[in-house]
Image (cartoon, rainbow, N blue to C red; front, side, top):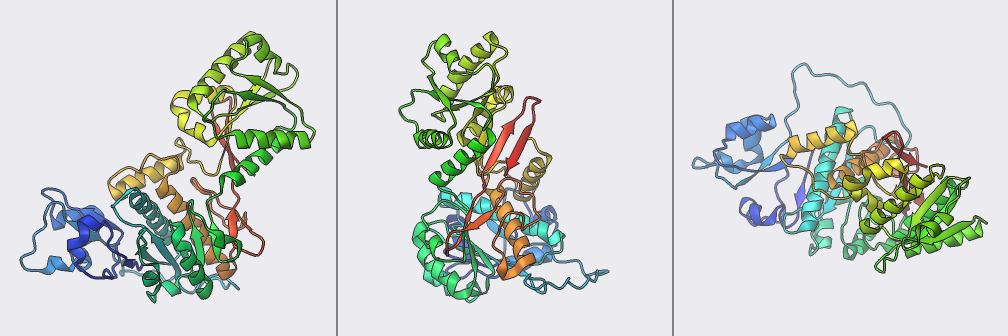
Length: 453
C-alpha cells in the first residue's frame, strides 16, 4: 500500500522539526504517527506495532544517525508490516470484468485537513484512520489499494496540491471539507475523469453540473422531505397527533408544517394538541380504536420528557390507547435517559446515519480502533472513523466491481454499512446525491431495528 502525504505538515506543531522545510513529505508506507512516551525504546515500539526495527528505521531515516536518541514527545512514522515472502501464495487470476478494476490497485486519494491544529483537523484525522482501517480490511479480502493523502487545510493552496502528478492518477478522491475549495476540485476531477466524494456538509453547487461528484451529506430540506415521505408511508393506517410543545427556539417547524401540508394533500386526518393542555383535553386528541402516532414540534430533551410524562399518565388511565412516536435525529443523543421510554412507545427516529452501540460489529470496530490508535473515538453523533470506514468500503468495492461506470445506486455494492449506508441518485444532468434515510425503531421487546427503505 503506497501512501503519500502532502501539505503543510500532519500534526503541524509537533512534526515540523521532523519533516524540516520540505514541501512534500517523504513517500512512505505508514499507517500511524506515534508519539513517543517516557522510557519507550525503538525495540519496544517496533514490537508494539508488529514490525521489525529495520522497518521502523526505514520509515524514519533519522534513526540511522549515530547520535540519534529517542526522546519523549517525538513523533515517528509507523509503517505497515512488510509482506511475508516465505511460502508465497499465488493468487488466482482475476475474473474478467468489462468495467471493473481488477488488474491493478484501486487508487484512492484523501484531500482533507489532516492536522492537529483545530477541531476540523482532529475530526478529519479520525475519519482518515477509518479509511486506513477499511484499507486493511479490504486487503484481507484480496483487494489491492494505493492510498495517497494530502493535507488540504482551510488555507491550503489547492492548485499547488493538484499540481502533484499523483493527484491526476486517482480513481476516487475523498474531500474536500471546505466550500471555497470546491470550484478548483470540481474542475480537476472533471478534467481527469476522477470520482470526487464530498463526505460532509459544504456548499457544493457544482453537484448540479458535474457528473463526477458524489455528495454524501443531505441538506435539512432534503432530509425533511424524505422524513415526511417515510412518515406517510409508515403510518398510513394510524391516527396522527401533532403536539405543540411551546418551544420558541424550535427548528422543527419546517418539518411539522410540511407534514401537515402533505397529510392534507393526501386526505389524511390528524389532531392537534398541546403539552399545556389539561389531561382531559390531551386525551381527546387520541383515538381509542386506531393506533396513534405522535409528532412533537421540537427536538429538545426537556419537552420530550414532559411529553413522555403526559403519555405515561394517558396510557395508565386508558390502557387500550396505543401510542408510538415519530422523532428526530437529536433524540439519539438522549438514550442514556430515555431508552426505556423509546422501547415502551416503539419510537421511530429518522436519521441519515446510525451506529448501534450494542451491536457486535460496533464493539469490534471500537476495539480495533483502540488497539490501532491507542485511544477511543471522539464522542460525536456521527463517529468520524466509522464514516471513513464505510465510505472507503463502499467506493473501493464499487470501483473494484464496476470501474468508471460505478454510480453508487442502491444494491450496487455488497457491503453492510456499520453507520453510514449510501445510495446515490443522479441530480438531473449533474452529479449524484446520497438519498439514505434510516428509520431507527425501538421495539417493545427491547430491540433496535434499522429500516432502510
